[in-house]
Structures are given as structure tokens and as C-alpha cells.
Amino acid sequence: MNTTSGNKRLAADKTGYQNEDDGEEQSGRWLISYADLVTTLMVLFLALYVLQLAKNREFEIKTLAHREVKEVTGAGGASATVAAPNVPEFARRQLLSLLEPLQGNRQITISNASQGVEIAINAKILFNSGDARLLPESFGVLDQIAGVLRDRSKNNILVEGHTDSVPISTAKYESNWELSSARAGAVVRFFADKGIEAHRMAAIGRADNFPLIIGDDAAARAANRRVTILVEY
Image (cartoon, rainbow, N blue to C red; front, side, top):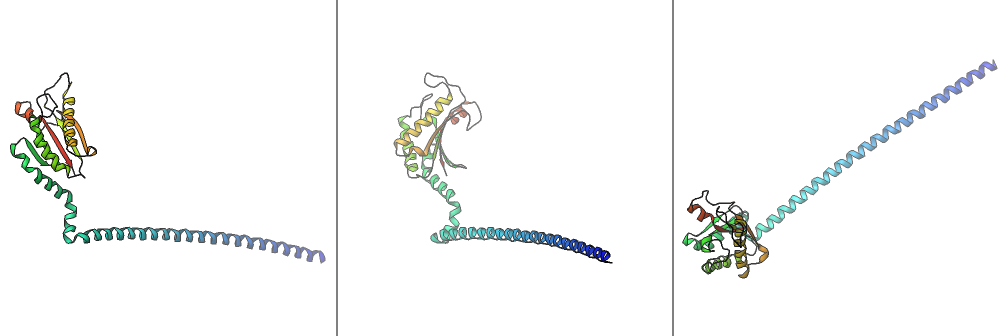
């Protein structure tokens, strides 16, 4: 009897130990699941917080931009709101009107280019054939152009020399590249002497690569020999 009771008690003790271990294991699993849930919720709330911050920042940027536009347009009145987007076009038209009197002899053309205003001068009123020294007769025209451009200090100026397609080879100029570059440089130097800032200007020789008229007859060659002055906007 004692042996049997002891065996039952031992079995009961073992059963109790096993149940206690199972409870601890289940409790540990429950804690792990709870921790995962808390972590997931924290990540979700953090993502929502960051998203809200981004939306707030975007709203602040739009508000600030709207405020700046309102201040600019308000300072100039209602007309400034309409005129502001067309400032470059207005400046082009103004420059065209200032240079228009120079077109009387049909040797100078003033046109509205995509980058600004282009002034094209026939080479025969600037240089002798095959030479890059400015003729004295050209000083008056160039001086008038310089007077207009000198007051427009915010605009860069690109001077390009163009020749016809007839090859040239002299002791001074081995090709039309050198001749066209020298002619563009001569005009830039003239403008610099008249007070136009050197850092605003650039001189490029184009040779015969950008003809005004396609053709090899005398009229086409005469039209293609030119110097163009691009006032950039």
C-alpha cells in the first residue's frame, strides 16, 4: 500500500511538473506574440507620422511659394501679374525697336531669334575681301549698336563670323575658319573699346557651316558672308 501510494504521488508530481513546464512555454509564446504586435504597431505609427510630416512640409512649401508670388505681384499691382511672364518677350521687342533704324540700307537685318535678338551685318560693310580689319566706314554702324548694347548689362552677346563656301588660303589666314574667327574677334574688340564688358561677350568663327542662303551663285555667297551678333535673353 505504501509503495502504491508513493508511486501515485510520484506520478502526480511528475504530471504536475509537466503541466507547469507547458504553462511556462505557452506564456513565453504569448509574450513573444505580444512583443511582435507592439513592434508592428510602433512601425505603423512611425510610418504614419513620417507621412504626415512630409505632407505638412509640402503644404508649407506651397504656402511659402504662394506668399512670395503674391508679394511680387502685389508690389507692382495687377499689371505686374500679367506682364511678368512676358518680360523676355517685352525686352526683345524693345531692343528690336531701338535697333530698327539701322536697317535702312538693307545691309543689316534685325530679327527675333529663339535665344534673343540677332543682328546680321553684311561683311562687305565691315571688311575688305579676305581681310579681318574693320573698315573705317563700319565704325558708325558698330558704334550705334554698341551704344544700344552697352546699356543692357544683363545680356550676354555672342558674335559669330560667317564666310562663303569658297576656300581661302593666304599668308595670314589658312582657311575660312581662321578668317571667320578673326572677323568675330575684331567686332568683339571694337565693342570692348566702346565700354561693353568683356565677360559678356564671346567670339566664334563658323566658316561656311551655317549659310544664310543655300547655293553657290554670287548672290548666295554675298549673303552668306556676314557677322551675326546675338543678344541673349
